[in-house]
Image (tube, rainbow, N blue to C red; front, side, top):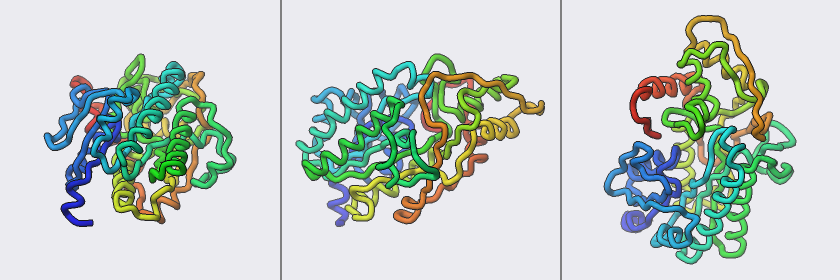
Length: 339
């Protein structure tokens, strides 16, 4: 690829003012890519200041006019835009999540074809493996998985069908990414209380606020392969670069992004207490949730490790400490999705 060709090819990041999207936008910008971000939330609302060279478009991609404007002149789309939140949020906003995520895909993909976009990298979710038949699972096992009963998981699975269908009919190449339980500095509440966020920042906030015994939401024995946000962004960047070069090892394929190590929620709570608690013995209570989720989420990252050489760099312990430092430093200040 010539230097001129590289500079003239523009990348669109949908949901680019979000948790992963803003970090990826900044990383790609630093590497010399021309970036356009589209999001229904402004960078200012998220506490982000993009360099002037990153073009920001404010708008809701469910609007076909906005979608067409967003993809105009675009070479590659990194499609991260989605309505997502904590377990409580997903339970209380099921109809909104299903409608919004499916409507975004229903406008974006036709617009991409019309604009002759070269490829799309789609952010799916580990939730598509909600009813996995075996553990640890790998990418090819998805064909044996029953449909998700979680609405968010179903909406992301539909998004995967969009990828494959638009490739089969319109030859729009794709890569599917499935993030597994991303956490880290910068994740703010999206619910009724500061603790209504994903499990790691929620438990950290409870411990730092002096809650005792520590309240744990849902099943104590549920397992999750937690992925530090910087590791997830790096994996996305590495796959992006191969897709941008039309590497056949990644094109029209799917990749699970996450740790080989799965942690029980009870063990996670105990570790957070050991690292951040006030010295009293670890004690906990449980609270049931009506949200539908997976009891076990345990993956084998061999495919992504083999194809692009990615391995998580940040341990769970170090990630918890980094997240806690951000929460403490931002306690009385406006929060940013960037640490």
